[in-house]
Image (cartoon, rainbow, N blue to C red; front, side, top):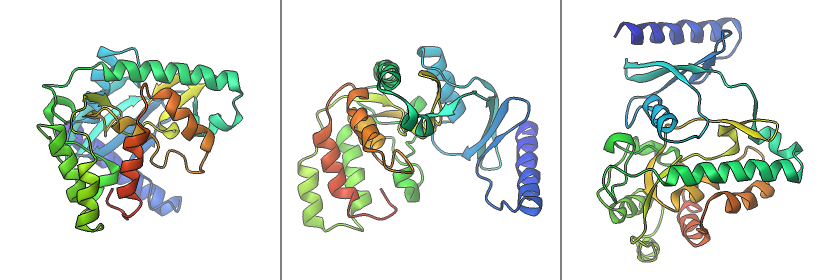
Length: 266
């Protein structure tokens, strides 16, 4: 609890300083320190992001930040991790030539193959690490959700979340076209260029793992195309099809049928 208290005091004092002296009232959840470290605070539900990163680091060769220490308290999860030098891919992508882009795609595809090989606690459970509840920014108004014993239960939840915005008849049609007979694979859950750090044409780190977990195999593709960049770049959207190992265009279009009608929930 002492460690959590120190983290909380740091965020309180630093937020006060930024608001009072730097005119930055909304400083966010991540603070970069001058000593080459980063402090992050996240909500305390579902799996702890620090443990997810440790799990990825132990079971794959995917480059992730090294966790120095982590703790929980005051309704938050805190972690101190190394700062990874490099450039966010969202910015670097626009200046890369075709050869550099091809090298990045090759690496990212190999990392997703590793992710998708991580076995769930018990198939086909849809959950986060350790069988805990899921997190998803498109469902943030619902907080955590799940875990689900089957893919069918997960799909039922998606339809339930959409119900306030979409006609029941339309939703029943969408639900009838969802395939429940699919694999569950480990998924980053926010596989966007803003969460990929590069140095030249080498991937230095993949960050922001708090939404990761075991989801239906198409979920990575769907989420990778959900607001991937601040400024739309069709070349990245087209590239996602070469990064995710299989074709999930049908599932993505079905998901869009729901999300295009909704505001803020999914």
